[in-house]
Amino acid sequence: MNFTLRILGTASAMPISDTNPSAQVLSVHGRLFLIDCGEGTQQRLRQMHLGFLKIEAVCISHIHGDHVFGLFGLLSSMAMFNRTAPLKVFGPQALGPILRFWQSFFGDGCNYEIDFHSLTGSGMECVYENKSLKISAFPLSHKIDCYGYRFDEVLGARALSEGRCPRSYAYCSDTMPFPELEDYVRGVSVLYHETTYLKDMKDKALAYAHSTTADAASLALRAGVGKLLVAHYSSRVREKELFQKECREIFEDSYALSDCEVVEID
Ligand SMILES: [Zn+2]
Ligand SMILES: [Zn+2]
Image 1 (cartoon, rainbow, N blue to C red):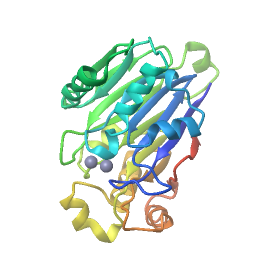
Image 2: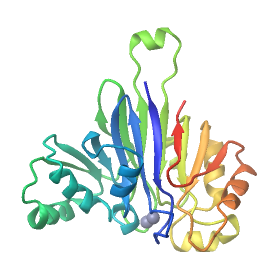
Image 3: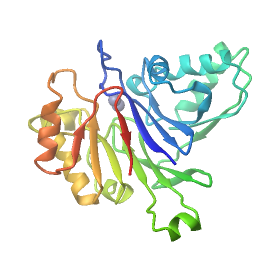
Image 4: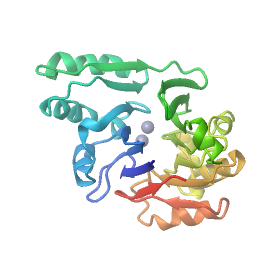
């Protein structure tokens, strides 16, 4: 049974020629979960052979454009592909009126329901549960209302008796460090955390409510995660390897992501 992460975009605010803004797809036992949806997400989905109609839910962290500008085109394409199954969308309260605006102007011929779940901002909240997966949202600390997501595999009695361990993934998009974050992501198999800045740019990171390599790696260490993935690189830094090198000084199992990478979570 697969628990696979596909990276659709790794840039921060500015899309550049070969690097899209934030978007990822987690496939769990054949179902797809889209996490953030920056510009260009549709094209990346096609490039990576991920069917639009297999997307069960969309988890939006916050409504900065680099995380959400791709959503409206995708919703339209789903309608053109004759989607009829309801689409769950999780996100901050402010996304609700934007989705209603989209529906009122562009929703003609849309034969599926957008089932929007507005997040509340107080602690860990379970937003989705089926027999193989539980998704929880938790608040982050950014310029605007912003959420991370945690995906926990649910194993049946047989798998547990065979000694299998449930796999888990946590996604922390734009955020400053804050104490509670450690508990939200504790012990996950794989943690994704933004690193917009290198460690010597801590003042910039604070000013823009972002994190540095050192922030992400020390969180990974304190929270006892299995592996750290980083991205959302500032367009000022050309060498992605520097992000990885700085993270590894603190947390050995760190990887700087590139667009179109595939990560098997185990
Ligand atoms: Zn961002
Ligand atoms: Zn942001």
